Length: 337
Image 1 (tube, rainbow, N blue to C red):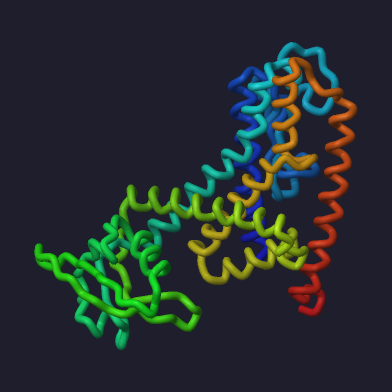
Image 2 (cartoon, rainbow, N blue to C red; image 1 turned 90 degrees about the vertical axis):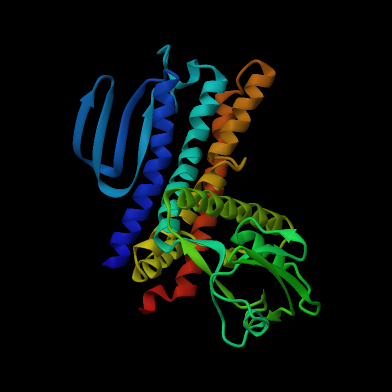
């Protein structure tokens, strides 16, 4: 039951933010929006305001925006195909943009809940290099190997990029005075270079926003790294997860609390936004490509040809999803539980 509720919550939020992005920009550029729906399937409730119907449907697994002339021919001067191509591009990319905004919001909440690590030492780990040379709680690290330290990420980067076989110079600020220490880092059980310090965590609104932005940026970099690995042949269907795998992961995250669930929501939202912008048929990214070509050529691509390309892409995506779903079922032993 927990898995079902958590999965509905995550999918509903991620997809709703995506569709809300399309809705808001479509309204802003003058496109007629026929319906904005929360949920899918049979209609439970509907209210019409102005030219738009606002619906709640039975299946709480997302939502959609129905724009005039988006998927059919329309002579309405405010239909999707009648507005300038640049406006249509703005509508198309707005969905992914809202996914990134959702990620920043929920990851900022996560950062506030857990606190953002600072450059001040809370404690040193017993038997660690930091303890052995005399680093203490309250010490503020200001320099490592002659590189100025600005935040906790700077500390992590300098330590991770250091040679564990060479001495490390650490400058700290203590009671207004600067002290210099020389220590030799060590390798942890998970093959990381460490010196054995735990930072003081700060909980503030500005620190949380900064944390949300940093976490979202880090997740986007992971997406680019994934694409690089894909082109290098280092990724197979075993490394992908479909709806079954995602729901299983959401259920596991929910067991460890709401903060963990929000972190996973942020990650899923970044994933959805990023992959939607890839120039693959049936995705928003491919529509941006066609609209860009329309701007360059001065006329639209033949709708039938574009529609066929999107259809082929959609079929291939469904086949990939079925393959990944089967892999998820085998991996997580779904039917043996």
